[in-house]
Image 1: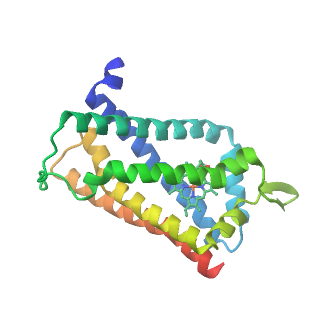
Image 2: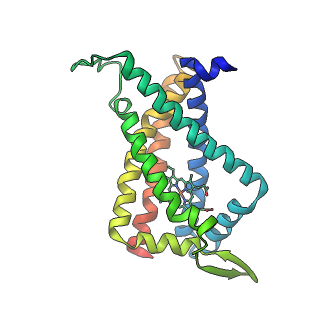
Length: 223
Ligand code: HEM
């Protein structure tokens, strides 16, 4: 057990597993968020957000989610530092044939995603959970937090919507390399499957990013 936490390959495996978990989380999160623009009202979105915030199983998953984020970030930074320290002299000409464009910027895109995430949690999640300054709405005689109106109000601000879109594009760079890299770290190298995983990674990154970007764009122009 101590080996997996301390050895370089162990850290990579843990980081990959956490990364794959986050990849699944993003799909669920996107699905719920899209209901805000595709259902014609905020009801489904608010009810889904309420379910995610109160269901016991989801609450346990939330601990796993935040643990996953922290683990992924911690090992990501650690491995990057070890990498830099192991190569004190960084040559101007690196081995470009071995590394994709996106792989060279993983730590940089990660830092930006980390900053985005902190702001994002303050804007929505922590407001709903702890600060309490979220409007309430009643559906079928039951009170719900109107998180939907919070999202709409934020994205009606052009600068805020553009900031989100830029962060989401940066996230797509991270995903473009991260998706296939996670499988590689888990040792899943195969003549046929590796190109397939790479293709799925590209499709996933493009579609998930486009889906998330659609939300601020749609809210800003049409809601
Ligand atoms: C258009 C884009 C997005 C919108 C409108 C959005 C909206 C929201 C809202 C309203 C919440 C609070 C839900 C609740 O408390 O139940 C939330 C939570 C959260 N969001 Fe986002 N989000 C977006 C993109 C992202 C992205 C790209 C990430 C990851 C990099 C992310 C990560 C999280 C996390 C970790 C939480 C807290 C856990 C949870 O409630 O599920 N979000 N988001």
